[in-house]
Amino acid sequence: MRVSVDRDLCVAHGQCEYNDPDHFTINDDGELELDENPPDDSRASVVRAVSACPVRALTAEY
Image 1 (cartoon, rainbow, N blue to C red):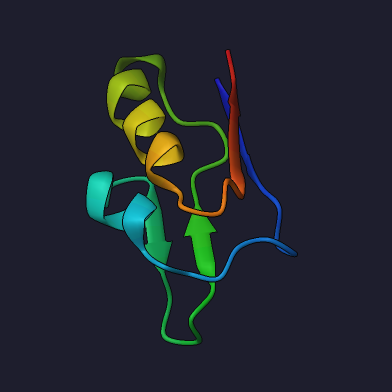
Image 2 (cartoon, helix red, strand yellow; image 1 turned 90 degrees about the vertical axis):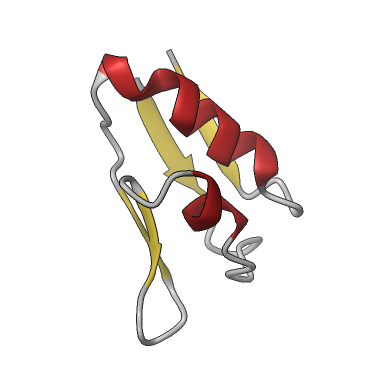
């Protein structure tokens, strides 16, 4: 699985972090840090986090 973020769209609402804090974090500078290659056993939580993005800045490829 590969996860990516469109930095031009991301406004750091934090919904991804709320839904999957193991793979998405808003750092102290207000920028998203993410695990771009999460393990396959995390697929459900990653997909939930990607789907929760209100501006659709995240994408996941399987």
